[in-house]
Image 1 (cartoon, rainbow, N blue to C red):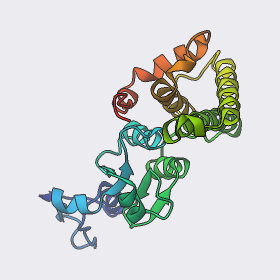
Image 2 (tube, helix red, strand yellow):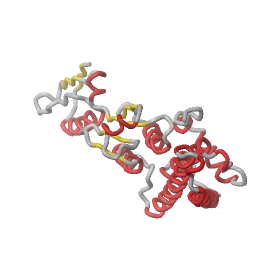
Image 3 (cartoon, one colour):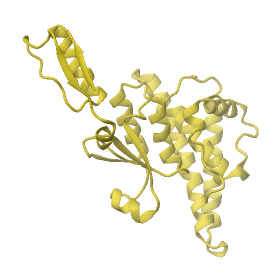
Image 4 (cartoon, rainbow, N blue to C red):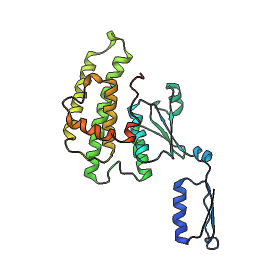
Amino acid sequence: MLLQCPISLSQASLLTILLKTAGFSTLPRFTRENLGHVFILSQSNSARNLNMMKLHVSANSPYARKARIVVRELALEDRVEEQTVSGLEELKNIGPNAKIPVLITEDNVLLCESLIIVRYLNDLSGGTLLPSEQKELASCLQLESISSALLDSIFARSLETNQRKEDERSPKLLERERTRTKSCLDRLEALTVDFNKEVSLGGISIVCALGYANWRAPEDAWAEGRQNLKRYYDHFMDRDAFRDTTPIFNVN
């Protein structure tokens, strides 16, 4: 596509920044002589896809779900392409930690761990998922850290029950993790009495952990007796980004 427009020198500087951010492959060289008629060749869709970031995920991973929600909330779908990983061998070829999510940036830099990926995408887009004010940031990270502990606890129990034969399971480990799960849920219930209805990393992490609990630990019935947490969960699940990334419960 060819664009033509007369602009000033100051506008030219701003336009260069905007075009680079938007993903144009060919940026114009501005001089005082050519400002009257500027021609810009835009990137084709096929060429643009080559420069897109790649987010390696699985449909049911709560860790990957954090990043998938962030991509949608920050409207980065045109810059981040989701690629579903088929198995462990493919994961080993993608990154050294053999876990998802993994983000390959436009500059071919590999980022592991959901929190690091979320931070990168938020900073890249100028998002507000991590508050800039120190007190608000601490509160947000408190929710994220407790939710991550909840998620890790449920994952440990799931691993023990699904990967080991019944006579090989550790009752001590399972009981310890059930206690940790309940402690995390009770703390989140207390912290969500009054809550900020704006999307943040804290809210995303809570929903991802509870969504995973619905799938892997339905016997916990986390919503029973926790009205604040249930209201919190329902509020964010009304948003497209959260609904569209809900785990598929019939897949192991």
